[in-house]
Image (tube, rainbow, N blue to C red; front, side, top):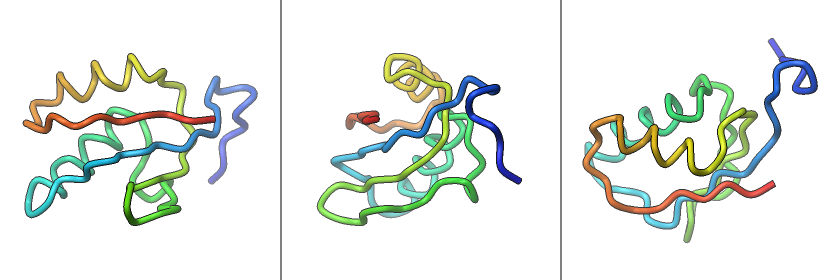
Length: 85
């Protein structure tokens, strides 16, 4: 199901994660990232795997809101995530 982004307030962005965690933290972080973006995991398209992990998603979050949501998630990860239009 696709959502009309003009009516939902969501926009298409690239999510760039320069330092993707490894091991079990990768799964925890990936889940927390999608939840912070308010995106179902099936609706995120992996565009690039390395050197940076890049996803294409539709979200209504700003970069500041995303950072705050990730900090509040309880996942102990200290990297950065950037949003690019």
